[in-house]
Image 1: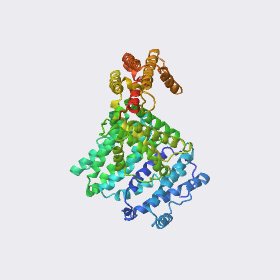
Image 2: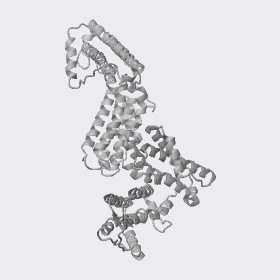
Image 3: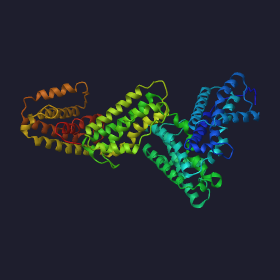
Image 4: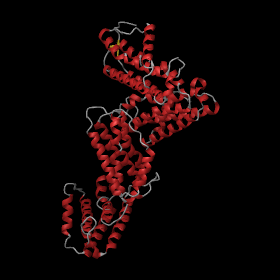
Length: 581
């Protein structure tokens, strides 16, 4: 169809439509075993031929569009079927021995070229023919082969793997946004949290429909129009947090996969593949429908990724700091100790050294035995001091920050790397924060509870050394009297700052202040030193008791209330007084 045209148009929503069909098709291609690719399908083609055929026709698009823009003509004669058949035969012959992974990579490249082309045309008036050339070979071409893709799915395992092939990137993209972004608006007007609730609702509905189909053999409708169901799903999600919405999504997906797993081969093919159509439309095809909308918010540049990392790290690290060392040997709601959980986090951050170079190139890289590594870290954590576990976590996170900072600032990061970094850093922190969050003091009463418990342990350990032992050296090299002077000074400092309502920044001066406090008590006797320590603790407790509940949890207030008292004593209980955590 060599034509000239004066009519013009814009690409409009072409990119989301292309992404929708490409992502859906890749979910079908990617999980199927290699031996499935050379079986004849209903169209007479093999899956290998379909894959190569789609890529080859996409490859024709950029030069054809360039020709249309330059001359108004398409250089391929679409009505000349003999030429099209010859082209298809040539592609099949050339790729009959090509490794399947190479063909998948070829389709990925052709798709990327199409995406780049469409983006270059956004906002421009272009000949209608240019847009048609793109559509003929993408949005109007992929559906021609969906029958073959469905026919290649033979078992429940095939279908479940297809669902999960699409799910992985969809779910990891949502995770990579970070919690703060979930309530931002998408390009279509709703929030990313509402998008997640929408996906969860349709998966849950599909699971219900499959269950009914398995039990009765009857096909069934979803129970309303798409608009009615969408409104109901978004309404049901109102008031839910991002964490609750994502938990609903995960639960719905698990339920759908469980239903898929129970389908027989006969049920999969029954009623013209009704089960496949329902599953595709509500899972991997649905993920593709929202791909462009979702991935537009994925952090692509190092600065964006660092922002998300810090948003996830700060609340997690603050919680770890506020519960202190004593709690880290306690068992969390997940059934392991907090030390084991932190060791687990540190290990997977450290593992990025090995896996990230592959992911930055878009490669999967070596696949670790996740359960074996988790078991090993959990077992090893029992003998590690809590302070070392925290330092290891801090060091591993700091190293990752440095790695990301050193990536080219003006280049996009491959999504394979983004999803790995997000999954092992801020997404991972978000996952495990609920295990320790209940231990974080949330009221003045809880703060005083931890104050009293730690003071009792600290004072008891000092009492064991006796007054005569205060002049002996601690494992750190100063005397126990020096340590007491140091602890008393920071409690006194806390009282002074709270009473004045002014909180100092000590970072640059902290060492000088520590040295001053020790020097000022060189001539103080053991009994007088203990009296001053006890008086300082009493004054500090009274000061904490006077602080309103809504103020004590303010980061600045807690920064001195907790860290100048019981969290401080924990450090010296371990380092100077031999307590083990």
